Length: 237
Image (cartoon, rainbow, N blue to C red):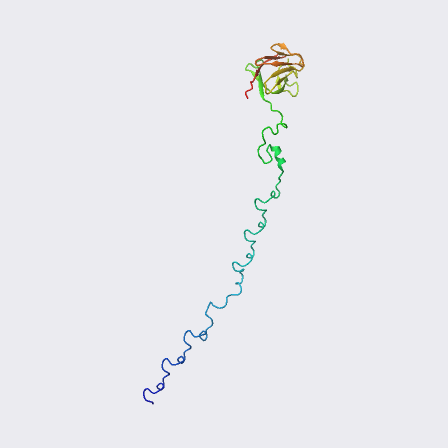
């Protein structure tokens, strides 16, 4: 063959290292464009999915609530099945609400506050005040007593008439024998005979029929044959 150093490789050898082109039987070097023969694109890569996976709604942040849900919190209008929010104008549905006049029957003012003292005095009857007592030991040795309140007190025989305030169990007392009249403020007390059969007496002085006689504390009052003592309660207010 040619002498050493002559051009070309020895017979049976390929080109020397560094010669242009890859060795026979090998593909292009790493980094060359395109994937190796027989391979596709790298796993997990490729163009982004154009649609959401089946069975799911749009991705977070997409317009509109997920299917089957109502509007997000804060959206206009109450949730289905609920009434207006607290503080909304007008009474609750079905609630019976009356105006300020509804408080009149309860003694409260228009805002539910207590009415001023004396506001309904004109419509309220005058209260009766305890003013005196009638005391007797005639039919009961341990003593009996009856209260006399301010205003008019009707006295008569027990079971003989309707509307009696004090019933005396004595046969000498008439069915409507007398009436006591006492002033709530001054405690002034008077007795009036109502035309009794056996008469009314104050300290054994007779009272003409249908006339009044003033009474003082500890005066003795006799109705027919039944005797009592009046005890007047002083005004402590």
